[in-house]
Image 1 (cartoon, rainbow, N blue to C red):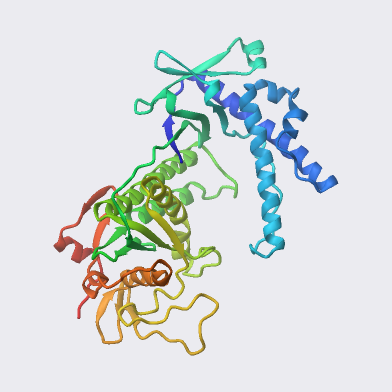
Image 2 (image 1 turned 30 degrees about the horizontal axis):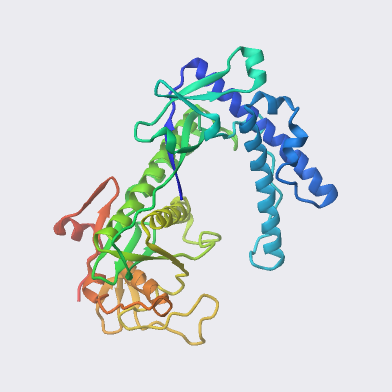
Amino acid sequence: MYGCQQLLLNPDQELAAVLEFICTEANNLMNCGIYYARQVWFKCRRIIGKYDLEKEYKNNKHFQALYSQAAQQALRTVSESFKSFDGLMKAFRKEKIADNPRLPKYLKKGGLSVVSYPKQALKIKDGQIRIPLGTLVKTWFKIADFFIHKPSNLAFKDIKELRILPRNGCFYAEFVYLLPSITADVDSSRVLGIDPGLNNWMTCVSNVGTSFIVDGRKLKSLNQLYNKRVATIKVGKSQGFWNEELASLAERRNRQVRDAVNQAARIVINHCLQHRIGTVVFGWNRRHKNGIELGKKTNQEFVQIPTARLKHRIEQLCEQYGIQFVETEESYTSKASFLDNDPLPVFGSKPKGWMPSGKRVKRGMYRTKNGEFVNADANGAANILRKVEIQLGLDLAKVSRAFLTAPSRVFLWNSKKMKRRDAALARPAVSS
């Protein structure tokens, strides 16, 4: 399993010019490759081979402007995208996916693309990493290489690849390295169910007598502020208007979102390690954001929350620590009553006349058949566990009303749990 570490570069004027040049050349080279691959598809109905583009463009000026291995990687990225398109076409014909895939499109003219260097192209000198440039650059500008600082927490021998990432007027160095597998003391029969949402970004319930909510309101407010400021700047401007101020806003917001994803995933994994939980069940309906109708305002908030990225990050950490990750569809988990053991049909196959015994009476509150009140999202998380109860052979005896009524709330950028008094003010009141 590989990990990535990004380092924000603060280049001087000369280095910034070099970075912009190689990223521009990579973008131009990839567009050349896309053109050739599209023509092969249109005329021959054939997907370009892995090495065909390299043979075709080895004398191209954009190829020679880059270091040879970086140029090869750019063209292989193009061939891999067409190979993925071919795989999606086969899946579409077999009706495994709903949307008809489209050929890869051209990149933005004059844009910047990622430049990748394998480990063998890199050298370490005086604590800095030396990155070579192409033959044409040496001839034109008399520059053979450039240097960037190595992260202090990463050994050079562990680096497998280095990528230069252009993003919103900034440049990042992304280091790809091999993650060591960690043998954690966990038990696969101990399981945590996760119900994703909006204000309650993740509601988690386990079969070992724990429950908590990862708060999502701070992240939602960050998105709201970003949308408001962008709308203010774009007043009276054309639809495609973009400037340095918007790029700076977007980059700041994206960094906050990436940090939120990492922190939320770490909260879940730390909880699993603390309670020896060896299985994580994530409720997820594919394409659940497509065509969603929650009102214009809530639609915008919901679609902008990166729950899919959070799910993927949790899956990565589970793999690293030897924790089983299970994804299950979550249809009807919010409507059915866990305490009343309501049947949980799969979406599209609901039995005629099916009705839940309980009801969601208020925001955040669910009333069971016997009139008992529990947290609505905790009820959904418990039902997600029931979706895979037989499949995984789970024992859910410890998932009781006490843990569904008052889950503790954990805040991003403040991983400590709230005091009971503050928690009671922060979540919907429940009573019996």
